[in-house]
Image 1 (cartoon, rainbow, N blue to C red):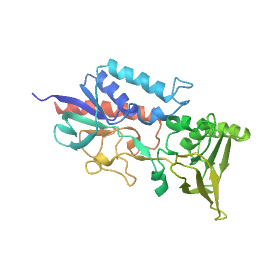
Image 2 (image 1 turned 180 degrees about the horizontal axis):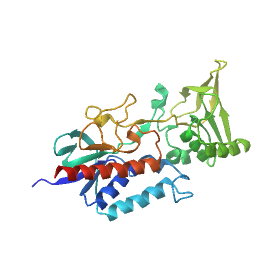
Image 3 (image 1 turned 30 degrees about the horizontal axis):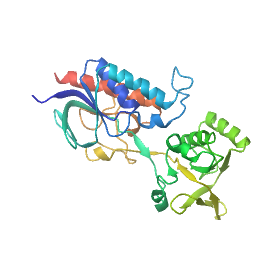
Image 4 (image 1 turned 90 degrees about the horizontal axis):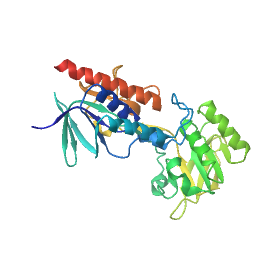
Length: 308
């Protein structure tokens, strides 16, 4: 007889792992399907200072602790890419080599870095262009780099890189930063030390080099004039976009591509729930992703019970 899980969770970020914990503790048979690495965006954060009970913890440490809890509860995990989802009283999830069935699905698809859209951005990807300072910062030790963006992620990246590189330029399109004050306070200290320089009203026009990044062309939005900065790396941190391509024809998405959910994390399709950064939430933080996962799992288990 074909095995039917109670809940299949697609994605093993913090939302997915929290959902797994809540569903498993409720007695559900749970399977997680993950296409990449465990932890999602949380693993890219070198220091988390706003997660309750931890004054400071790295993303990798937090994810490792959560993963151990998931395993201890007997949750099954498979590393494979989901290619299709088929709705029905019993849902079917298709991967390249196998299909899985479940009474409910929780989508924890996360988000991916937003790109600038410059042709040279793709050309130099992995050759000086990066979207993760924690992942790639060590390659630029004692070198000059730039960070594009003015929000939390960009300023976190700049502060982190200031400990490794010789100089960090922060290219901000507007005339002020949008980051939390605590991050700006740290940035200001790095500016005073000469490790960081913020260029406001500045846009990245072009990335240049032969085989690797060697300089960037920037434009001052006030004067309209272009200038160049010689550097070795450019870190793009202009936000994220939902990784919802898989379900664009299955569940309702908002105008920005995020999954529309109600207060119970129910999507437009009965028995399919969603949690974390892929949803139309007002705040995308680790703590809210965990809360989403808990609600989605509780709702999914309740929906299964109601079917009996």
